[in-house]
Each structure stands twice: as C-alpha cells, then as structure tokens.
Image 1 (cartoon, helix red, strand yellow):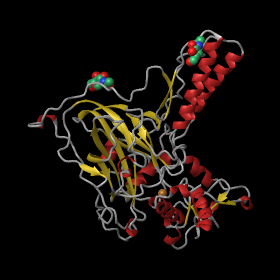
Image 2: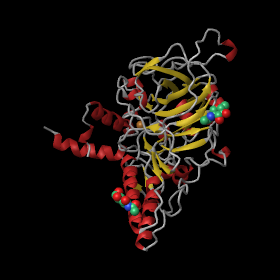
Image 3: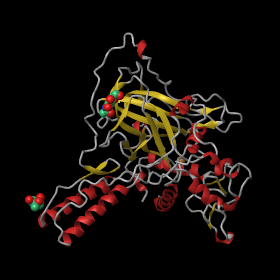
Length: 479
Ligand SMILES: *[C@@H]1O[C@H](CO)[C@@H](O)[C@H](O)[C@H]1NC(C)=O
Ligand SMILES: *[C@@H]1O[C@H](CO)[C@@H](O)[C@H](O)[C@H]1NC(C)=O
Ligand SMILES: [Cu+2]
C-alpha cells in the first residue's frame, strides 16, 4: 500500500488549497448587512467550506455541503426587497476577494417556498429561478468576472407579488474552467428568509435540486477556451420566473397569506450575534453568589458560540468572551451588582458597503458598479484594493522576495519558482495561464507573458485532487 506516501501529499494539498474557492457568506437586505453567516446555511468544516459541490447529483446541490440542516435565524425581507449576496474567497476575511479569476461562468438566484425556513431540508422539488446571467457578450464578461469587479456582491430584487411566507434563497455560481473536461464546479448556499408580502403568486412549474442540471449538458460541458466561444452560452436550469402583474391574476387561486414571522427571530434580549448564535443578556444580580452564577452562565454561552461558529469566524464570540471576563473581574473585585452594561448592544457598527444595483444586474447589461479602479465608490468597504496595493508595491530590495507557498503573491512574496505558476495576477494570486500572465500581471512578483500552459494550473489540480478525495468519501484522511 502507498498510504504512507499519500498522506503527506494530502496534507500539503490541504494546506495550500484552503483559499482556493469560494462561499456565499453574508446576506444584505436592502443594503443592510445581516451579519457574517447570519441566516445562511454553511458547511461546518471551515477547511473545506469553500470547495465546489462534490457532485451534481448530491443533496449538497440544494444548499451546499451540510446545507440540509437549517440554522437558527431567519431574516425578514419585504416584497420587492433588494437582496445582495456576498461571496468570499476566505469566509472569515471579506477583504481578500471573492473568487479566483480562472473560475469563469454563470450565476443564478433560486427561491423555494417552504413551510419552515429552518426545518426544510432544501432538497427536492419546489425551486424556481428569479435571476440569472451567463456570458455578457457586449461586455465580454462572464457573470463571475462581474462578481469579482463588484467585490464579491450579487444583487437581485425579490419579485413583487410573490406569496408571503418562508423561503430558501439560493445564489448559485458555476465555474466552467474544467467543464470541458467533465468537471463543472457548482457553488451554492442558502439564506433563510421570511417574505412579508400580501401577494399570492407562485410559479406553476418548479424544478428539483438536485436533478435540474446534469453533467454533459451544453451548459455544464461548455468550453470557455474555444476561440471563438460557441455563443450564446446556454444557461443551466429553468428560465427565470416573473410573476404576472396584479391585473392579470385571473384564475390564480388565493392562498393563505402568512402575516407574521414566528420562527428564526433574534430574541429581544439578544445583545450580540455571531453567525446564527445569539448572546442573551444575563439575569440581573446583586450578591456574590449571583455574580458568580452570572459568570458561569456567561462562559457557558461563550462555549456554545465558539462551538457553533460558522466558517465566517467567531468575532462575536470574542466580544462576548470579553463581557464574561469583565463579569469575572467585577466579581473578584467585590462589585456584585450587575451585569455591567446591562442590555448594551455589543454588535459592531453596521458596515457601509457599496453594493451593485439589482436592476442593472437583473438586466444583465453589465453596467453595474465600477469597472475601473478610478471610479471605485468611496463607500466601498470590501475591495480587493488591499491585495492590489500589496501586489503593486515593489519591494525595496528584490533579493528579499520569498517564494509563494500559499498561492498568493505581493508584499515580498513572488510566484517565480512556486508550485502554483510563475505569474502574479492583478488580484495577487500565482498561476501560469493567461489570466495570471497577461493583462494585469505583476512583474514585480513573478514573470509575465509567456505561453499559455493550462495543464500547469495548479489551482485546478488542487481542485481535482480534493474533489477526488471528497467524492471518494474519505475526506477524513486529511489531517
Ligand atoms: C410588512 O409590510 C407592510 C406593508 O408593506 C408594512 O407596513 C409592515 O410593517 C411590514 N411588516 C414587517 C414585519 O416588516
Ligand atoms: C446560583 O445558581 C444555582 C444553581 O443554578 C441556584 O440554585 C442558585 O439559586 C443561584 N443563586 C443565585 C443567587 O442566583
Ligand atoms: Cu476554486
């Protein structure tokens, strides 16, 4: 057996590929950030959370790996609300980027009406598409390329007139860089929402996920490397559902309209949220025993927070932990009246993010958000500029460059001689294909130009390798 020689290679692969792919990590409702991972179903293992879905026929296709299990929170939205989805390369660090530039392909947003946004497994019939975009021929861009330009944000409008109640909302990306080799790579996740609407419309026809798309279809075996490409790109899945206008309702059967949200709300005494964990303010106390009781209760909540933290991280748990430490300190100092800062909101200030306009995005006209660095909006919090800045500032002494071990470049790290390829892309990643070696290639941290060497795109090799391991059902081999 070769196990002993395979394992170290796996370990190396795993270490290198943590940042390889992408994950839907945060929902915005009408521009308002809902919090890292809040109302979002995510894989539990942060090491593989950004991997593509292993098989088009698996239940993971609905809401991602581990996505059949609901989370505690359900976000409220209104009829016509703008939903924006933040897609991250590193779920716990939105400033790094959204998806590797090699991952060209279409995007879509699906809905499923459910009785319970928490209990519904997501798999099976009931899904319909409310928006999609493939290859924009006038702009010469894939949807995923626009996504990168928009700092990882996709925006859609909830259609007016939809029946109110609970829904799963599923943004989907399809990366086609290996599609011609029989390996289309889907990324999908689900947000749990309650739609406040007096509408009564739902589509007559829905699709099943998994099942709505297969390997070997024109959309999933499309060759993005053909010159010219066989356009128009044939979109996967059903056509987009548009509710008929109210005057057209005709024989639509009136359904029961749900008026109030009863599940997934943050408790009124919640003072901080991390993912789908809510920190509940402690009971008031005024003596020594009560103080230490509160301390114990506080640490118990902290443990739950860390134990349930999603791949987006545990920043909120740390804030909560500081509260527990403060209670401890006060108890030790003999201050037995508390808790300190009773009912104070400990959530960080709501961040200001510039999001793409849903109208433009839904029309697919490619006009949304800045195409050039010069027109970047002032309000943008999440930009890739940190990376770009890193990649463009040449080191004072070129002898000080170290060779990339993680596939990124810039800030003293060069791609030249790395296993990822010799070229440093404008986004700060190493590779050896045109995306890395031509326009935007940073010569300060690698070589530029040169022949297109697709087989040496190690990012893709890493994918294939990890997927093989996953599909084989033995992901636990990875230490
Ligand atoms: C639901 O929508 C109605 C009408 O748009 C609005 O008045 C009401 O405040 C909304 N309710 C909630 C819980 O958002
Ligand atoms: C402290 O906790 C214990 C065990 O939960 C309980 O029996 C006791 O009444 C509490 N004391 C105070 C002062 O809250
Ligand atoms: Cu990837």
